[in-house]
Image (cartoon, rainbow, N blue to C red):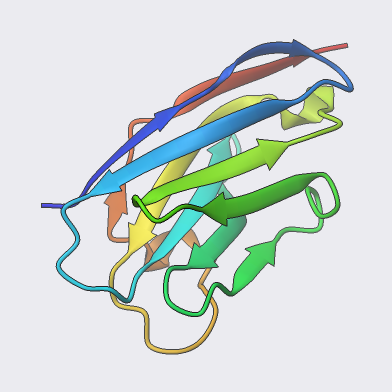
Length: 126
C-alpha cells in the first residue's frame, strides 16, 4: 500500500520561505509521479506542481512558477521549496501519487492521482 506523509507546513510572513516534504513508500513500480496540490475552503483543489520519478519531468502552475521548486531524492522523498510566499499561498497542501504514468512528464490533475497524503497547513501572513 502506498503511503504519503507530508511535513514542513507552518506560519510564515509574506516574502518568506518554507520547504514541504512528502515521504512516499510502498510503491510497486518505478514509474510513478508525485504531485503537490493545495486547497482552500470553497475552492477546487489546485495542482501546483508534479514530478515524474523516471524522467524527472516537472510541471508548475502559473501561480507558483518562478517561486516554487519541486525536487526528489533517491529515498522516495519529494520536496517543494516555496520561496517568496504570498498570502494567497495560504492553503492546505497535499502530496499525491499517480502510479499509472503512461508517458513522459506528469499529470497535474487531481483526478489522475491514486493516493493522497493527509495534508499540511501553510499560512502566509501579510
